[in-house]
Image 1 (cartoon, helix red, strand yellow):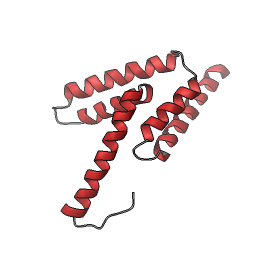
Image 2 (cartoon, helix red, strand yellow):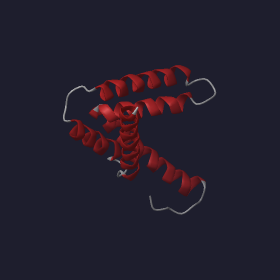
Image 3 (cartoon, one colour):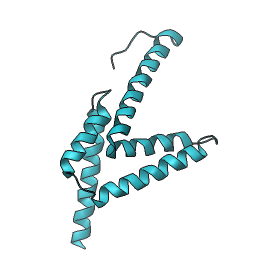
Image 4 (tube, helix red, strand yellow):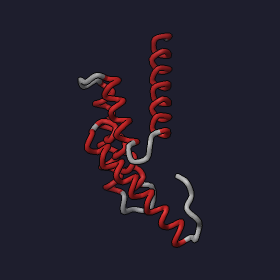
Length: 122
């Protein structure tokens, strides 16, 4: 089935490219830039990929919030779902960028004040 292998290979390459783009992103603009690049790549419309991403992101966010109070990975599942939604919705991408900025500031504070470590370059 050469066609299936070709499609699977394209999907894998696209996912690895997307992941690298997120990792290279500038803190505070990472999700917004990623969102804009995906919108440009798709040029509008509601392709199957976008619908699937929204459905999976919503399910992960809802499921993570529902089990988040239990011991285990519920909170991480919710964060992953929010990140998937941020890929598709501009407002969620902006919120995620703001959260990343606040989290980085908080971690710098903890490193300096609580752990007594000097400020490290981010």
